[in-house]
Amino acid sequence: RLFCTLLHRHLAGLEKSSAQTVGAFLVSISADHFDLPVLSRFLEETELPRKVRGYVAAVRVSIGSASSSASSSSVYRIAELLGSLNGSTGSDRILCQAKGPDCDAPMVRYLSLDAEVRFRELFSSARAILFAGGTLEPRSEFAPLYAGLSAKTDAVDQVHHFSGRHVVPSAHIFARYVTHGPTGQALDFRKDQRGTSAMVSELKAILSSAALSAPGGAIFFFPSFDFLAAVAPPSGSKIGGRCVFVETRGAENGGEGIFRSFAAAVRRDGGAVLLAVNGAKLSEGIDFKDDLCRLVVVVGLPYPNASDLGLLEKMRFLDRCRAEGAPGLSGKEFYTARCMKGVNQCIGRSIRHAGDWAAILLLDHRYANAAINNSVSLWLREEATAANFSETDRAMRAFYKGRAAAVATAAASVAAAVAA
Image (tube, rainbow, N blue to C red; front, side, top):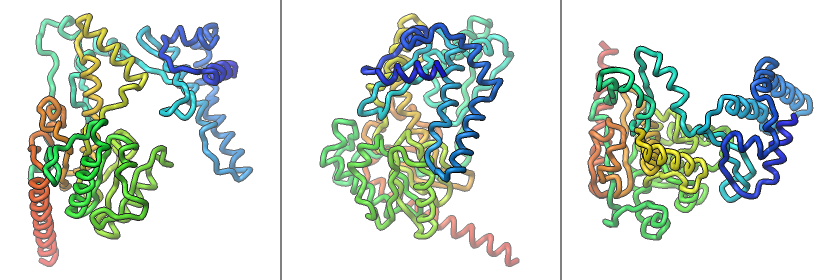
C-alpha cells in the first residue's frame, strides 16, 4: 500500500514526461528502500491480486453496480510493474507520462530497450532454436537475438531464414500498390498532405467505388483516428450503397460490438463497410474470414507517433548500439519496421484459410518504392503490382467476377455429387 501511495503521489505531481533508469525512478518516488523481491514474492504467494478482484466483483454484485473493473485490475498492473522492476537490467527504462493531448491521465510504463538480453542465456545453452511467428517481416529487427552464434561456433551460416508462401493459390489473391487516384492525382497520405481537399476527395471516391465492387465485407484501415474522423461519413450514411461501421477510440470490449454489428450487416445485406485504424483493436487478431472480408484497403503508411517517449528512447538506444558496431536496426530503420509490421497485420485480417480469397489494396505512391514494399509480407509481394486506381478497379472487378464463377462451379459440383 505504501508503494502505491508513493507512486500515485509522484504521478499526481508530474508536470513533464520523462524517461528514467529503474534506479533513478525508485529514488524519484522515494521507494529505493523497498525490498522488491520480497514484495513481489508476497503478491505471488498470497494471490492478493486475484483476491482483490474477487472481492470487488462480489461487492459490485451485492450493490448492483455495473461500473468498470479498472480499480480491481489495477492491483494486477502494480504486481506486473513490481515483477518487471525486480528483473530489470541497466538498459530498461521507466516512462512517466504526464497528462496531455495524447494522455488522458498521468501514467507509468515499463520499457525494455534490450529485450534480447533475456534470450541470451537460452541461446548460449540450447542446441537448436526455432523462432516462429505470423508477422516477423522485416526480420532484420531480430538480428541481435542471434548475434553471438558466429562467435560461439565455427560455422558461418548458423541462422536459416524461411518465409512460407500462402496456403491459398495465386488465383485467390488480388493485390495492388495503388499509386494514383481516380482523377490521376498521385496518392500521398503523409501527415502533412493527407488532410488536403485533393487527397480527401480522391480517397472518398476510392472508398465508394471499391465498396461497391466488393461482394462482401470491405475493410479500410486508416493511419490514425484523427484522419479517420476527417473522412468518415455522418452516422447512418452509406458508402457504395453499403452500411458503414466506424471504429472509435477506446471502444468498449476492444471493438467487439462494432465487429458483431458489421458481421451481422454483411450476412444480412451481402456486404458492409468497416472503417478501422491501423494498430487499434480491429487490426490485430480479429478473424475476418470468408465474406466478412473480401477487400482490405490500407490507406497510407501508418508510421507511429514520432513524439512517443518510448519510441524515442528505443530509437536512441538502437542508434547507440549501431554506433558501437552491434547488429540490428538503426533507430530510423526500426521506425520504418514498426510501420510495415502494422501494414502486414492489417493485410493478415483477410484470407484466413485454404479456401478463402480477397483483394488487397495498399494506397500510396510510396508503396511502389522497393525500399518500402520489400518489407511487405512475401506472399503478398509476389502477387502485387503497382497501378493507378482506374486500372486497379477494372482488374479487381474481373477478379471478383472470376471468383464468383469459380464459387458457382464448385457449388454445382457439390450439388451434383450429392444428387448422385
